[in-house]
Every structure is written in C-alpha cells, then in structure tokens.
Length: 228
Image 1 (cartoon, helix red, strand yellow):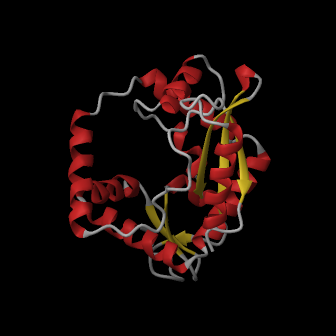
Image 2: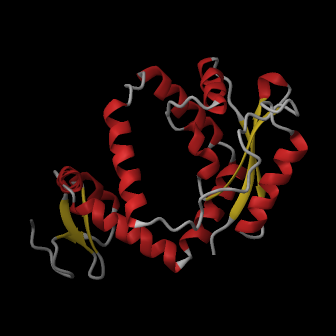
C-alpha cells in the first residue's frame, strides 16, 4: 500500500518560517529540489535560497491514506495561511486538497499534455550548471540525515509493495528500454564487462570486480568456467 503524507517547506534563514505546504508519496516532497524554472512564487523563493546556499527544512507528516493526506494539506494551509491572501507566509496559490492523484485522463487530454510537454522542452531555457550543482549539493546534504533516509526508504518500500505500482514501473522500464536511448544506455553499461556465474546466478561485471566475488568464475553458462 502506498504511504501518503503532507509536507512543509521551511526557510531556516527566517526563523524556520513555513513557506509551502504540499501532499505526496514516495519522493514527492524532495522533487522541488530538482532544477526547474517556473514563475510560481515558491519556486522563485526556493531558487533564491539555493543561490544564497540556504538549505530548506522539509517536515514530513505521515497520513493514514491519500484522503487523510489531502485533509492534512488543507488544514495546514488554512492554519498557517497563504501570503497571497494576506493570511500568512505560505506561497501556495490554492487551498490544497485538489491534487491529480487517481485522476483518469482521456486519450485526447493525454495527447494535449504530451504536445504541451514537447513544446516546453523545445523552448526550455538551458539550466546554468552552477545552479544544478547547488541543487544537487542541497539534496545531498538533506540525504545525510539518517532519519530522513529511513523515512524515504520505508515510504518507497511500501509504495513498491503495491502490485499496481510494480506493474506500472515494469511497463515504464520496458518502454524506456525499447527506445534508442535505452538501447544505447545498455550498450554503454555493458561495455568492458564480462559474464560470471557461481553455479546459481549469472552476472555481468567489470573484470576487476571478479577479484572480490568469491565463488564466481568467468562464463555465462552456470557452473562452468569457459575462460571467456
């Protein structure tokens, strides 16, 4: 079963002022740290913090289910208050609870979204390398917290225990592997590697890795060393 939660972004440079509330599952709470360019006030605030080397504090509040996560999101926004309404510091533009989880799109709407995404990619401005590195550094620092890693790990495990999630992931990987980019990636990953086996399992590794693999011998055929 997927683990849902609500989350709060805080600005430690301003006495841990809450600046954004959201709802999600898996790694959604940390997705905002990826290099993106939007005109949303929260994204602009986050970009400014990153330029000033300020790491946001992310508070995660576990929910019983998705409906409960939506409820928590709405309550937190209502209690803390939106800045655009003059009621608080939050940079949210809505009152929450209106996410797209579980929404079924028609074939026509999916085509429109796909075309819009393609156009956005064509006109997408090039990310400045130092900004990308800044975001990576912040994400790396956040992941040093063992409690945060444990919470993400538990959330991911629960998510992948859902048969529907596993099926979607498998189908997505199959489609990605069938593309030219996927084929090239597999070729590059296999370059310089050799087949080894221990009579039960067959793996493809770099030659120097075989030294630290007791019980494994060269060869793809289980149980045989063909010297290849």
